[in-house]
Every structure is written in C-alpha cells, then in structure tokens.
Image (tube, rainbow, N blue to C red; front, side, top):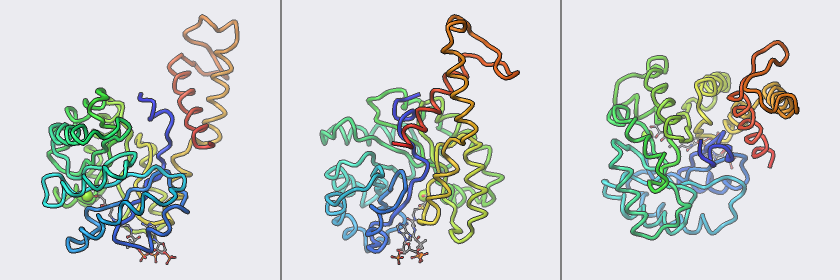
Length: 290
Ligand SMILES: CC(C)(COP(=O)(O)OP(=O)(O)OC[C@H]1O[C@@H](n2cnc3c(N)ncnc32)[C@H](O)[C@@H]1OP(=O)(O)O)[C@@H](O)C(=O)NCCC(=O)NCCSC(=O)C[C@H](O)C(=O)O
Ligand SMILES: [Mg+2]
C-alpha cells in the first residue's frame, strides 16, 4: 500500500466546472477532501479557453483544506496540450486524465510532465471510463508500482462507461467495477467511485456510497455540495471498526503476544494481517482527525 493510500483520506472528491464562477467561489469553504477543477466534460467547447485562463487565479487564492486536482481534456484532443501547460503552472496535487485507454496514455502524460520538469509531487490520476481501459486495466494498474509513472489514483467514470457500453444500470456495471477495484489494489492505487447524477436524491446517494465503501472504494466523486457530508461520513472508519482496531493493536502489544502470529480476542481469531489492517484504519482516522 502506498504512503498516500495510508495517509490521505479521499472520502469525497467534488467536481467543480472551471466555467462556473458561483461554484468556484464556494470551493475553499466546502468540506470535500479533494476538489477536482474540471476543464473537460463540464465545460462547453466555447468556454474552454476562458476556463483554462482562470486556473492560475484559482490556485493563487487560499485553498481551504482540500487537495486540489485539475481534470484536463484528453491529451490527444485539440485542448489537451494547452490544458496541460496551464495545469502544470498551478502545481496541483494531481492532473486527472480523462478517457485513458492504455498504459501508454499514462506513460506519455508522465513523459510530458517530466519534460516540463514538473515536481515529482505532481501525480497523475486516471479516469477509467472506456471499454478499452477496462480490457487493459491490469497493465494500467501495474504502473502504480513504479513511482516514476506518477500514477496514484483511479477514478471510475460511470457516466462515460454507461454511454460507451449501453449499460445504464449499475447492477450490470458491477463486474467491471470490481475488476477495477482489484486492479487498483494490485497497483497500490487509491480508487474513487463514480458520480451519482440525481443530486436531489439523498437516499439513493447514501445507498450508493455504502455500496461503494463495501466494494472497496476509498471515496466517491461528487457533483454537488450536498453530497460531501454523506460521502465523508460513509467512507470514514466507523466507531465500532475503530474500537476493534484499537483492541487488536493493544492485544498484539502485550508482552505475552509479542512473538505470536495468531491470538484469540473476544472469541475471534486475530492474525497479524488483521493488525496491519487495524494500523491502516487507525492511520486513516488520524489523518481525517488532523
Ligand atoms: C449539477 C449542477 C449544475 C447543479 O447546479 P445548481 O442548479 O446551481 O444547484 P443548486 O442550486 O442546488 O446549488 C446550490 C449551491 O451550490 C453551488 N454548487 C452547486 N454545485 C456545486 C459544485 N459542484 N461545487 C461547488 N458549488 C456548487 C451552487 O452554485 C449554489 O450556490 P449558491 O447559489 O451560492 O448557494 C452543479 O451542481 C454542477 O455543475 N455540478 C458539477 C458538475 C460537473 O462538474 N460535472 C462534470 C464532472 S462529473 C463527470 O464528468 C463524471 C465522469 O467523467 C463520468 O464519465 O462518469
Ligand atoms: Mg467521463
């Protein structure tokens, strides 16, 4: 597991269209763990140059507590190169690449960052939202094990996936989403679930958050401020899980258990792999608290 997976909570990642000044004005005051400034699908073609030109001023303003990420247009598109140059000037936590199809797409973007002498801290996040990406997901995820690739996080693009495949019901997207979960874990990558479009439907959103957390996602991408709180609550460790984690840590810290690989705790078998899980959970809770 990468250090960032352990230490950075990414329970909610709010998209803000860079063309929407009212929404931009709210960015720093919202409680999202991540803000994704979007130059891609939420910005109409005619508005893209003006949106791109605004980025520098946005990043010069106070940030709030969120990590700031910029979603550019695909590098192969007519806007991609200019978007990338503008994004690099802002030094965001990451540049989010849409419509990634292959590992080569990530490598080419990484080369472009290296050529521009972008600091190593600027990472690449990849939208997984095309059939080709899902067919190539193992090779793409493997790049997560090579820090030089800069790949740090996958973001599910369930709207584009539905558009490209004709599968509109999330139940039938499940095999692909679980494949994505598996690949992200194999690559040591963070993983964010797709958006829930019906932002007035709080119950439906809550259900989908709970589902995403149970599936192994680290957090959810959101489109509206009202979705931030529920996502933060659902993707945070529960009080019960934290109490269990503390108990496991205390049990293994006892001198009589120092050399044991497995112990009994409250009638349950607990192994050192559970200790590792417990430590990860406690580190995540500490990061959220901080
Ligand atoms: C969906 C929206 C267009 C709805 O906006 P609006 O009608 O203005 O909603 P409200 O009146 O309820 O808004 C209340 C206030 O909250 C502010 N607001 C709304 N959305 C945001 C936001 N995302 N960030 C910050 N602030 C926001 C409004 O300005 C109101 O403020 P005030 O009047 O001062 O009270 C809108 O929510 C929106 O544009 N959302 C983001 C859409 C977006 O970015 N889409 C692209 C990313 S999703 C995607 O591409 C998925 C992926 O690629 C895939 O394939 O699945
Ligand atoms: Mg998309």
